Amino acid sequence: MNPALPLLLSVMLSKNGTATERCDLPSTLAEEIDGYGPVVRRILSAFDYGPQSGTTYHALAEFADHFGHRQVGSESLEAAIDELVVALRVAGVDRVETEPVETPVWQRGRELAALVEPRHVPLDVLGLGGSVATPPGGITAPVLVVRSFEELERRSTEVNGTIVLYNPEWTGYLPYVPYRTKGPSYAARYGAVAALVRSATPASLYTPHAGMLKYMPGYPKIPAAAVTVEDADMLTRLAKRGSNVVVHLEMSNNHTQGVSRNIVADITGSVFPEQYVIVGAHTDSWDVGQGVVDDAGGVFIGLAAMAQLRRMRLRPRRTLRLVLWTAEENGLHGAAEFVRRHRDEMDAVSLALESDIGTFAPIGLTMSGGDNTTACILRRLLTLTAPIGATRLEPADGRGSDVTKLQELGVPASVLLTRNERYFHYHHTRADTMSAVSSRDLDLCAAFWTAVAYVVADLRDMLPRG
Image (cartoon, rainbow, N blue to C red; front, side, top):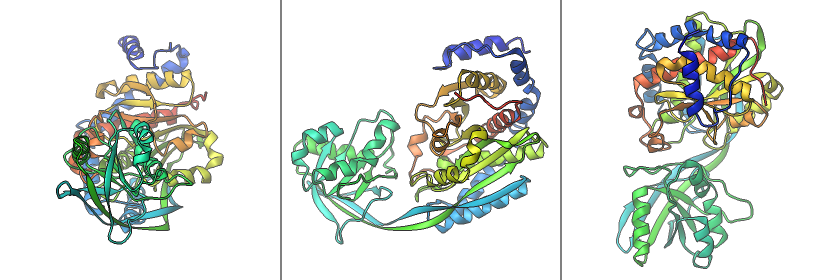
């Protein structure tokens, strides 16, 4: 055993949130995990200025520049899925298939917004996914600015005939989301004719952020769009000064049903082929930018992991399954269909890994499901990736998207943690391009993902469940 290991483990246990429970793994299990040290070092060195350095970035850049955004219902998404299937076959996986997914399809049309009073100012907006269109000629109405749902309730008698602008204080993505998803319906309940929502970001360079809404049953469906932070704040200041704030909004869009595809690719287990470790990401994106941060980066580190294990001729004891979900952005339809189709296999999944909050420099994993022994196993494993700084284990705290569909069935799940402080600067915007990621960070993410996926898939026993 590395003589520094007990000290390192002690430091990790003292700093990592709920990772403060005592870890008394059986010595045989601790030694088994420590025994993967040499192979983990080989994996890390392959990407960390080794022969695979830069390859993930270059493959991702070629993909992003060729296909651009990959909105559900677009030709670019389906062509990108075809290309990924070819890449997986070239990588030498044992099996790769696509599985059909029925999904709603929402396509953006012409969108225009402007401040009409007290002066004319064009406003940059992005219609929220699933929004209805405005009537022909658009809507012109006074704006009612609210900071919270509580304020909307207090001022409910002022709402009728207005465009409600939600401009909540940014305290994080999860507290923000209800304003985008439910806000339009709450405003419609009191007679609003449209809704605007401050974009989901702590910082902005005049970039509106797309995202999905969810109309609530029993309320009228009104048009809804995201505005930039700068415009939301300007409208708020004008309203606070008592100005008569009037906005004109035009939106057109199309609602249909369509079929997309999940990708499922396996490296078959050598001992337990009917047990699985899943590595997941999603192929679709919004129709702005290149969808690199969300989530082509996650797709390509998953692909890199599968390819590297085949290059190294490493075949884990249980099957390593890469699942590239479609239709995540418009409601996790790909993950829901995957779970429906593979329901009988869920009890045989040791761990589901997901990358969907950026491929910046890796720092560790989240953990949900399982029990304290599961967490202790992962903490021990993370001591092996200390050379690249990825040692943290944190509670999920709402992080994870497609993988939540597996968690609902009791599957332990971990999400890739990265230094993603800038993630919401790019999320769902035109700025989500290759310029947002670095080759070095992608190398480290690919190395970390390969090492974690291999070790968990190769352990003698499945991870315990809570």
